[in-house]
Length: 367
Image 1 (cartoon, one colour):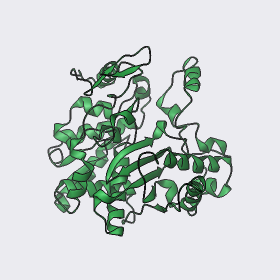
Image 2: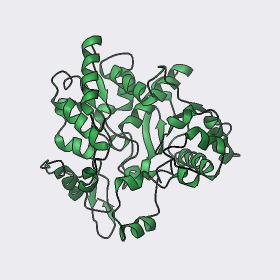
Image 3: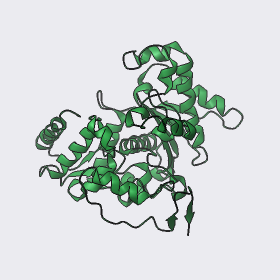
Image 4: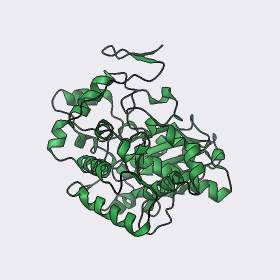
């Protein structure tokens, strides 16, 4: 997609023509408040794919997504039926106090996986969506993420560089490490995709089969399993889950979900009785869990069988910028800077209701 995002656009147009599609849901990076593509501003697209000028010059892969989103916005055959969608941080169901200094609590595609898990669990146990309480974990090639669902709504999330280490990504970094590095080198996006569990293993993580990494049972694998278990346990303050659903690249490797289940239940021994940990299964032979979750949301937006799920998740009420809850630095300066990197002249915005910001001292206060 980085080299030719137009290939994705052409395929989408073919499918729309052949199948008579009513709604399309497009992966929207860090997130755009739910709206049709034609309604999205260039600033929203810029922030959903934010990247420094230096990283952009290197041709970082997120630029392919940025170009695709702009193409969809400008394409007459797609812009009136394609929805851009929020990340977890833009959902009204997540309390503001959990968003403090968070950008990535789960990108838009993670919301899709959560939607699929809610739908699957409700169907399997004959529950209304309002009665579903889950934790949804994704263990992909780069990062782990985990999201808390309470009463059918996403209420919390730890993901990417705010969670525990993933396979490639270092996850949440000791601020002193970041400070030390920043004094001898620029911190780039690529650095965020390094230093994770794979680097405790043997061999090149990009060429070594992940199945070998799992079967080795070494320190790297133990770090990955424990990290995912810690993500789950950190969310137990936000929901009392009926089950944990696991998706992503590692969930398809034999034995991984069982190992994760043992780690979670071992950590909860004496506190919880047998938390069910299962793989989130997509019904298609090729499509990933997030892709099927996107189809579930598209169905709901088009008024299909999942319309109630879209209502319960309150996706239409999503709002704001991904920088709205940053208090360590001037959030408006961040928003303006990353908008202008795409040649966008940002409009003034009000801060989230009830919040004021003081930066420099590192303090944020509530009025």
